[in-house]
Length: 293
Ligand SMILES: [Zn+2]
Image: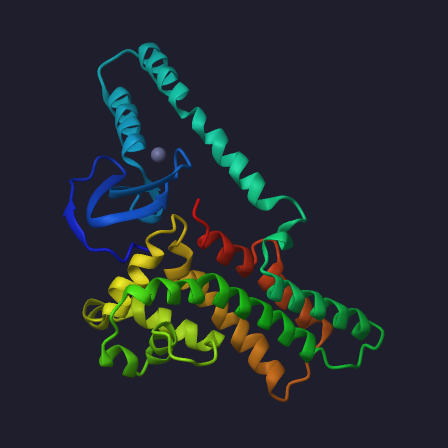
């Protein structure tokens, strides 16, 4: 899954299902176990899954569990000792609270930026009108949902990245790159329209998949990498099953069809709405990925 973009400077021997790594620079992440946002060069992962990161404290606690379980004590004594460890894990309640806060049932739209919320609301209004006539084309309403996501992506991700890049020196190579030159130019402060969904997607795909360019581009190294490493939940942004897959799905199955000749129905509007604003919608994943906690 999404392995951090930073370089690994040391890999420690596995201890059971735990593998610990030291990175060259500190990375922000959420610890799977205690739920705390941590910033550290040391990251442990559970069962080789980069989605399951552990902080150093929790690494220590888990090691004690394995030590107890693998030790020579009688079962009763082992159980007793494990019980002692349990008390250290009370922090997991904090995670549940945080999740609750983020979900604030049915109140998710309060997290949207005003322009994005306006497009969402406009689409819903159009949808209500369309419901009265089943033969109408639902494309405009679908385009509105796509626009809402694009605006949020620009306001939450691309514009703050541009702000961060004020301190970055752009090379000609960056600005002329065939895959991310447009984004580099935008982030370097050139007066131009904000990038569209497809352009952002192609940029991230290239950054994640092209080691060569990643190593040699100051825009990707000091710009993108340093920027996203500040966010503990940024994994979704660089995971190919995360933002990548989300934008692909949204553009290929909805926006492009709506913009071309296909007649789209209520059914497609509903499934597009589910993709963006549903229970596990890409909108909420995007917002969560770019929160500082
Ligand atoms: Zn932890």
